[in-house]
Each structure stands twice: as C-alpha cells, then as structure tokens.
Amino acid sequence: MTVRSSFVVVANRLPVDEVTTSQGREWRRSPGGLVTALHPVLVEHRGTWVGWAGGTGDAPEPFELDGIRLHPVPLSAEELERYYEGSSNATIWPLYHDAVETPVFKRRWREAYRMVNQRFADAAAEVAAEGATVWVQDYQLQLVPAMLREQRPDLRIGFFLHIPFPPIELFMQMPVRAEILRGLLGADLVGFQQRLAAQNFVRLARHLLGLRYEGQVIDVDGRPVRAGAFPISIDVKEMEAMVATPEVQARAKQIREELGNPKTIILGVDRLDYTKGIELRLKAFRELLADRKLTVPEAVMVQVATPSRERVEHYQALRVKVEREVGRINGEFAKVGVPAVHYLHQSYSRSELAALYLAADVMMVTPLRDGMNLVAKEYVAARADTGGALVLSEFAGAATELRQSFLCNPHDPDGVKDALIRAVHVEPVEARRRMRIMQRHLRSHDVRQWAKSFLSTLGVPENE
Ligand code: ADP
Ligand code: F6P
Image (cartoon, rainbow, N blue to C red; front, top):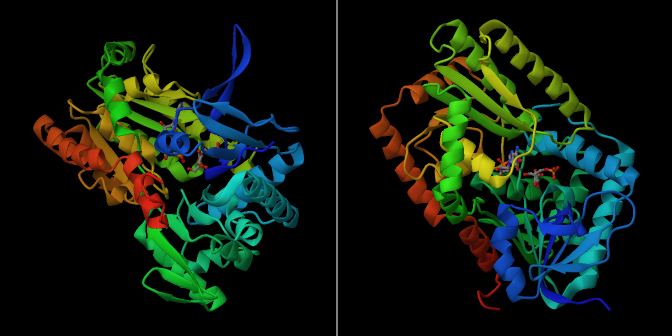
C-alpha cells in the first residue's frame, strides 16, 4: 500500500547513492545541500522524495532511509538518452546558460521529456496526501507543476529552478516554449536564484501568454502564481565543522607538501562543464606564466574537474579542449617532478574537498554563467580563520552576495588575469577582512534559511 505524505520533494535524482559494503549493496544518503536543508522538514512530515535512483530499467521498490521515504522513478536507457542527456542537458541546459554552447533541439527528445515529466508527476500525485505540499526541483522537471495540478488541484505546489532563467529572446528559441511556461505556471510559487531571473519569468508570461502581473504575482485565469528570488546556499556549519577537524587540517598541510610547498596554490573545483569557464581560467594562468607575472614552482594550479554528463557531445568536446590546454601549459612551464597544473578528473569525498579549500591560497570560480555556484560559497565557509582569496565571475549567481571577492568578467581575459594577480598579492590583513564579511553573510544565509524562506512564502507554516 502506498504511504502518503503531507510533504513531497520531486527532483530528477534521489539524494542517495548505492554503495557496495561487506554486507552487499546498500543505499547511503548522498552529501548535498538540498537534502541537508530538507531533511528536518521531510522527517517531521514523514515526507517522501520522488526521484530517479540512477541506472536504467526497473526502479527499486520505495524504501526508507534516515527517516525519509524514497520513491524511485524508473528511466529506460532510451529515456536516459533523450530526456536526461538530450532535452535536459543538450537543449535546456545550454539555452538557459546564455546559450554559451549551441542548444540542440530534437523532436524525439521533447517527446521523452514530456513522458518522463508525466511519470514524475504521476508518482508525486500517488504519494501526496490530500492538501499536501509538493516541492518540484529544477530544469529537468519543468512540466511537472502543471501536470500535477491537473490531477491534484488540492495540492500546494512549489517549484525552484537551480539554474539561470534566460531573458525572453533566448527562451523564445525553445520549440515548446509555451508548454514549458505553462508547466511552470502550474505551481503556486516559482523560485529563482536571482531577482533578474524572476523578472524574466513574469515578463515572459505576459509576452508569450498575454498574462497580467502585478509586482511578481501573475494572474493565471484568476489563480495567483508568485515568482521570487531565493538564492540557494550551503550547509555553512557542516563546512566549518569539517575544516576544524584535525584530520582535515592535517590533510590540508599534507596537500601543500605534496605540491612542493609552493608560495601560491591556485585552485579550481568544478564539474567538467562548459559553463564553468575552466578553459579561460587555464588560459589566464598560462598567459601569466608566459608574462612571468607568475612562475613555477612558486605558483601551481590544481584543477579538479569532476566527470559529468560524459555521453553528451558538448561535454566530450570540452574534455578534449581542457586536457589539451593542461598539456600545453605543462609542456611549456612544468619542471621535472613539478607540474604547473595538477589536473584531476575525479570525484572526491567532502573532507578531501574541504582540505583542498583549506590548502588553496586562491580559489578561481570563473563561470560564463552559473545559477549560483556553491563551490564559491563552500570555499568562503571553509576559510574561517586563514584568509585565502576568491576570484569570482560576475556571471555566477554567488557574485550578488560575495561582493568582497575579486570579481571579474570571464569574457575579458585581461580582467581575469588582473583579478587573479590581485588575489595572489592581496595583503593577508585585507584578505582576512574580505573573508570575514563574506562569512558573516553566509552564516545568516545558509541552506536551511533558504528552504525556510521558500516554504514560508509558499505558505507552509513552520511547524505544520
Ligand atoms: P553544479 O551544481 O553546477 O555542479 P555547484 O558549484 O553549485 O555546481 O555545486 C557543485 C557541488 O558539487 C558542490 O557542493 C561541490 O562541493 C561538489 N563537487 C564538485 N566537484 C566535486 C568533486 N570532484 N568531488 C565531490 N564533490 C564535488
Ligand atoms: O545545478 C544543476 C544540477 O543539474 C543539479 O540539479 C545537479 O545536482 C548537478 O547539476 C549535477 O548534474 P547531474 O544531475 O546532471 O549530474
């Protein structure tokens, strides 16, 4: 019998990983801000998380883990290709990121997107109790709010977009633009990372569907749909606690030693994604080495590039370009036993990442476009004591909040180089001052506060 919940989260992925232990295969909660933020609410409401468990074919039966009910949705191999790799990550992802790569439009992908969104909506309708709150996450599931409302008008529906929402002229490229917009308008509250994105959305509703709005409330046939900005954040306390452990502190020291105790460690940590500006960052480093404004071994760069969406063509092309650039830099500037760039195409544990943050003198976050960029916030939270400097693209959502970083325009190579050099040479007192201000901001704007603020705007009473 299906267990019904008064609070349901619907996201493309379930917040769990399947791991092999000596006892066999088992599920573990995956680390991640979203699940951390929603965990208390889910536990309190005997909540359910609807999502894909990874893999293809039959989905596992619903199960419970750490007080959350998990309701897996299956994807076939063909759906994985068309809905996830195709529509979500080769059409919508590039289009919503300012079309920094050309979006690919295919009819059969759209059909799969529709079918899979319907499956997620059906699953949510099945597990939601009468009058429940359902919170749908992100660009993979933009049709779900309307599909859900159609079946279950009794529900309170929220939607949050984790990535940017494009200006009207870009959104209009989408062949199924009205369907997507109507999908989102099925929600009572549509949340974005930035105020500008919420404005793009309400203006689009008027432009495309002739809907009227006042402030950020759109009138959809007499039903108010509110748009708003809710910049997501991280679990600040968790990061602060982690970097305070002797293990992470020791590991950070060890990393510096392993890198040859250079004067300056420059770090990048990203999914290997063309929106992240990894190439332009490497190029800035190469030019500074060529100009002799930086030298090896005094300065070295570590670039962690987490494997991501590896079957999508744009990502394959990016990997080739990044690896070629790393090879070029090392070819020209490395010394025997001392690479100029340490390139790591790997996934790491949270504590290893924390140690890297702690070891780095300068963190480079240079996306061409990013909804928020949590890595930037994690670095700031990790540097509770020691300074360190953040070079941050103006085109990351995080730039709205982290004003004391070294901001740069990633489209201007000289601007990026200048920001990097200023960050490398910042006085320690000034570095600490900047970090302190940003840390203060993050402590009062962490991921729990983000979830609270969205849910209270949606009208969910705090101890409902
Ligand atoms: P996106 O959501 O586009 O991947 P964000 O910067 O907002 O970008 O979030 C990335 C998250 O993934 C961060 O929490 C970061 O710590 C984590 N992460 C990035 N690279 C790795 C890695 N190599 N191993 C483990 N976690 C990683
Ligand atoms: O931030 C966008 C996002 O798609 C998240 O929803 C997701 O956690 C992350 O990027 C990684 O992407 P994927 O789920 O495609 O591996």
